[in-house]
Image 1: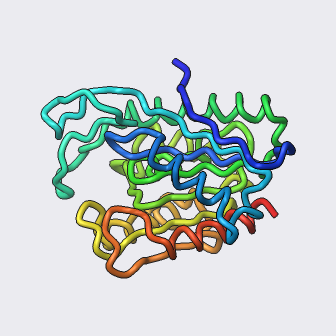
Image 2: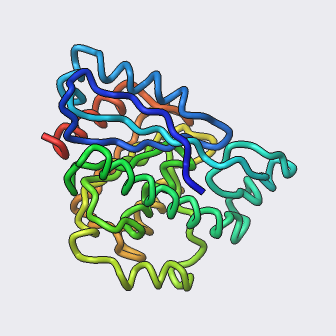
Length: 242
């Protein structure tokens, strides 16, 4: 299965970079499409994004156990919203989604002849959770990762699938820069959970270099983006691409 997606071309006819950004549970690319259109045209950020194509994939539609089995846009199953519940994520769907994202990255790189290192993979909430594991799946080194209000999905550092991916991870793939933004008033992803997520990837499994992991906390921000966060995210994009 190939992922369908929306595409935002830059104002310049010369495309050098790409951001692939994944939406959250029950969402579509529309919301973040508006956000990235603003970043492409705003006087403060237009220069940063002038050579960057934005790819916004649609997640598969599948049953979400925690929502009574309702079929909805979802990158993976959530079996319970109780954070104390063990093994509450559908890891098979999680890895399958990452494999489809990997294929889409390859297709986009080929279409626009984008160099390795000029590709950022990002996402919000569920999409951010995918982005944090993306370097484990990519065939080529990517330029960076953006995680907005995301969380760790892996049930254990000794999960056989995870161990297999880690064994194949190159030092170069570990050293990619990461921008992780989270609100301190998020009712879905607590600050502790967000901090634990950073610790899992930078220390527990050491798949991302802590020195290159920018962890940013936004005061009085719930489960949504924030203007300061988007400004700092844009600065991150500028450093990766320019």
